[in-house]
Image 1 (cartoon, rainbow, N blue to C red):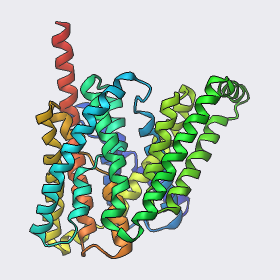
Image 2 (spheres, one colour; image 1 turned 120 degrees about the vertical axis):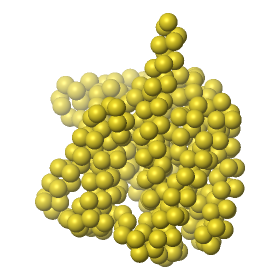
Image 3 (cartoon, rainbow, N blue to C red; image 1 turned 90 degrees about the vertical axis):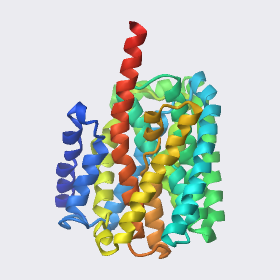
Length: 383
């Protein structure tokens, strides 16, 4: 890991904003960053070594920050989101039931023993992708609140269930780790809320702003890294640490100055670095050597879309259902853990990631569809 690598990553990551600039294309920034990583990584020219420990650590920092920011996008303080939790939970349960049927069917068709893993993948949603996308597109309304609740529930449940599905021997340890992170996050919320009420947080904010100390940012990062350390030690993804802490901060209320600082860190450097690293780590050439895994990846991607589309029967617009199907963290974690434990068939890790890429591509289309639908509804209401 050197400055040349950082320079390459910083430059090629600009492909994300470049592709996302034309609004009519509705391409999320992440697509261009992933594509850039594929070009310079294991699948492409090999300019970046995704296995480099330093680069991997920086990518994990980026992932934790992305999930933290995603958590802060959940409007926890709104009474409307609490009312939407029941609808979101019911839809998440429907998705899980559909995922169970399709996950078992895919495992039988392809002759694998990974039905539990496929079920978790099909039922999962990526809060790191969906929630910032909802926020950036300005999508609002009750259906969006219910979708937010559904995605948050599905993401947390999948994070907790993944070790049981792919690494049963370490599942109890992971469950304890998840419970510990949840407990620590609740405790952090209590402490932060108390500091907010007695004015300590405001005094710290004024001191930091006047003296240019960035104290709030330093403290938030220290807490985030401490939670991430607990997650890594207990075999839990840093996704849960970042997301849980983000929810705690959102429940108290995130200061605007801190939000801007975190946006600069996450979206300006660490986030793009993570997505480029992720693209660089993809061994898509394995798919060429194992053509049946291409079919598996496509089947997983299409089954995920179908699974989430079933929420249409509960009143969620189809575009919103497809938007909730976006996957990222869970397939990445599954491919990483499965490769380390040698429990996946040759090319299966690449198939899991191919399925995720299919959902992300469709999400790009669904997001534009959802925005168009919201604009038409708004226009008809005004008219």
